[in-house]
Length: 422
Ligand SMILES: Cc1ncc(COP(=O)(O)O)c(C=O)c1O
Image (cartoon, rainbow, N blue to C red; front, side):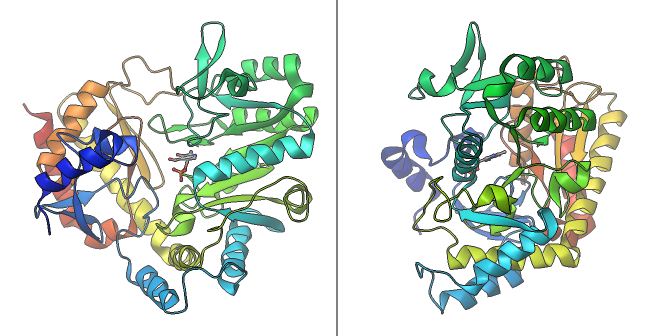
């Protein structure tokens, strides 16, 4: 196999920025070149073994190459990996998802979280016959022209070149966890709003949970004004709880968008909603969505094996390890007298440079410091521990971390303590 330097150099000449997704270029001091994954570890081409708290940016809740997922994929390989028509696996996976997330509902499988949010918003517009979407500042819903927008001077502004203002003018950007502003938005524009999309636990600005009262108010406002409430659970789905935010918060959305974990680490997105909404999708309805690779058999097999393992205790294991990690990090932080905090929900966590985790992306004075966080990431990586390269991402744990137990935890905590210096 070619060496790391050689691969990186060749990658720089064939990919913009040397990578195929921007966050991968943020790893310091340079992108990782991976040979293979194994349980909670990644092995690099140059022979380093890293404890992986990125886990593919969320999907690998069982860790790398989990035996039952590998077996399911291999079994399916021998039966074909693209059939272009219906098979039992996709029915089984849909039934399993619905059983937890929305009994009595329906599913459309697509191939990424981005496709799923695009489809969900199109569906909301198709069902209501309205144009406007409400999103919340700082949230990320994939590479989606209608949500790559933030509030700027004089109104919403695209966050990417090439996203046209004609698109983003149709999106209202409201502040997260702000009940009063949500009420105002509906007072002013309620009859034009097709849907409200949000991550019930924001996982793209560190980890910021919605307050229950905020979700309840959004539920009330959308009902009163005939708009749809869309939970983007691409990250939190089957991590926060098997039943997702609906179970965790007790608030019922109209549409749930899933991705990541439900595909067991293979490409996936899913739109879930009650029958009366879903039947607007083609071919039963007139809201278009189609995909050559939708519900591809390998993903269905991997997703099904993953959800089965989660039901059999893997979810608790991933959570338990994260809990111990949170406790360990918290202990070191207070020993050092640092005024930092750790925010953890289930198997997701992030650190903040403020005594308490922020409640909004803009709040928590000094909570975010990409320079300081980047340095911590680099120092931990030098000690064999891979945490996300940006504080906007979150650390993920898996059941494989739990299975490797105390040794892995002490290795991580030692690297953390050493990385703080002093
Ligand atoms: C909340 C949320 N929605 C949607 C997406 C898009 O998913 P994908 O990267 O599979 O397109 C992401 C990706 O990280 C996400 O975090």
